[in-house]
Image 1 (tube, rainbow, N blue to C red):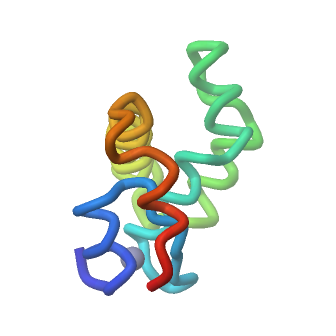
Image 2 (tube, rainbow, N blue to C red):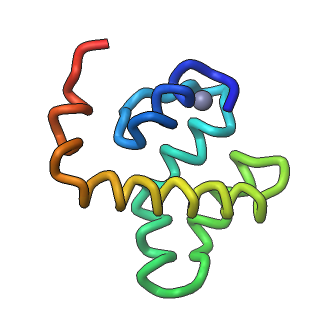
Image 3 (cartoon, helix red, strand yellow):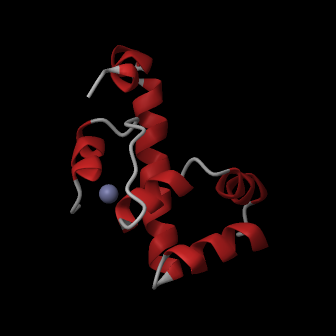
Length: 92
Ligand SMILES: [Zn+2]
């Protein structure tokens, strides 16, 4: 992880801060994208999601693994009520 938003997200995956030029941030924001949600629901990579991966990552498959890791962490962070919404609304 190489930017401050990614460092924050390591501690709190629900941090809603992204840098456009950072692959870690791109992976995190794609984990929230409807195209990723569709791909998960359908059990295959949709054309929209695939093209987002191609536009975002030099290595789309590695990027996809990265997105999945974040999606997993975001899901478990949401399931932990003690670190829920409040943490994301914190003023930084
Ligand atoms: Zn970042």
